[in-house]
Length: 537
Image (cartoon, rainbow, N blue to C red; front, side):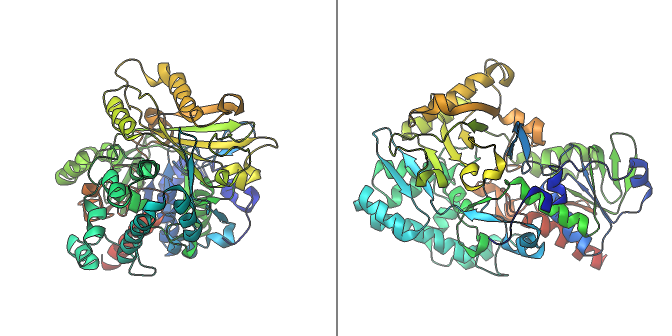
């Protein structure tokens, strides 16, 4: 949590990621490159930094005008800086933070120690603090019969994290994915940990340990974040583990707010890459990837390089490869589900929401994250509705208020609210996102208003990004924020590796091991694979 941060401390942040074209494209085409990276999302920028630091001549090509992909900073409202998609740090890998000198660059984050607040329609609410002692006190008050079960539920998460993601070099996220046999060896006889990793639905998980239905429903959303599945679907408990497995700042499972906004992470990676000698060119679209040879640009130029690394999602990558795609690799990519089900609202507020369960405009829960829950029946019917191309009666919403931790992102007298909600359809059975976006906005705010007395008066403006909007805005096929599902059949050795079946061609995005979120280790893993292959080439 060291360092101070402001936009001028980072050259990339000073222009909000709009780095432009450093030299004319014809000059880029005339140069000799060791590696070309397609896409300047955070993992592509991290990969570039590692390759450049190893002395390689690296060019990063980004089709949009701004670097960072889904983890960037924009001004959706005048004088308000927000990340369009990413909102909280937790899985950002400590090794990447340290090796790319992020604290010295200005990286500063505030742990979300206030945890998760969940209000209920009966007027009660529970604050699930990140501090175990404080949370135990809350559970003892709220659902005393579940105290031992709550401890056991947390304990299995900790055991699984220690088995697969111990501190240091034995962390399974570093390097190639562990084999099923290696995971089996690490889990030993821990049946509960194995069920959490592979089998349990989120409903199975909470019902195994907890009896209070409100407490069960308080946790259900944590098993489907960004996942096109119901919390009653097998394997969704593993999503809860994935998001609880981080060690940012040496604090197991902790999440936090990055000063300046989440996009600062990408901007610091960009600074590190350029400082090491990498060239980042924005507004340059790639038309074709030529494995082992380079890329063709949409403008007609050819950039030659023996190594190409794609930070694009696997479907976009497949399209760019065209006939050069290995048939077996193509089949594997096409089998990975990649249709998103989330809607992101970036909201400008005149005041923080006033929650009926715990009234007030500056309360402890505003400093953590807030879930507006669904009943089990609402979860089931809502997921089914979205699958039919319809809107549910209510959305599950997860809320974050960057502005309570960081006043630099918003004008005086205003607040920001990030709303991450599901389920919504990618395609409507009737109408389109263009014709129904305002309806989705009203639905999301109505879902919040069940628990708040002030939503109608507090909201100044709201930007609504459905799956097709995210797809168009950030280039993520299907609007899927993790470049493909992170459920057990698509994780660990079943996730796409950095190395592909095509010599000289690699992947570095969230579609690779260890999966989605703002992690950075995907980019590092890809860079290490490239460097190893070049050394043995």
